[in-house]
Image (tube, rainbow, N blue to C red):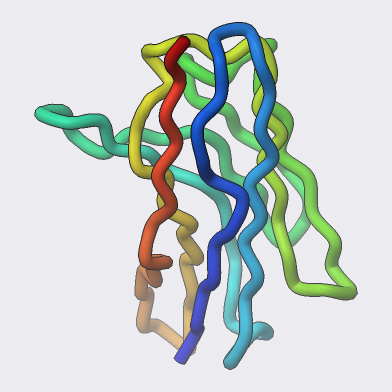
Length: 119
């Protein structure tokens, strides 16, 4: 079992910044990849950024050059720093952890945190 708790969402003006946090608990040792996805109204959930247990980071197209994913391994927490935000970034942001136990793979999701970009 992996439990993910997100924080840091809210309302921000265009051009502003937000930082999201996701703290993991439970079977931390089974986490292989951790990161963020988002889902805007009427759209499919899309990748924002992920980090592997080895530290490799992948960014989705929407996050390139504006968002930065980081990790504090001691706190089992990942952070998403979002800069130069636009209304198109408005979505529910979900923390994700992908785990493997022997041959079994599983995705775990947080409850989601709302981010709204508006003047």
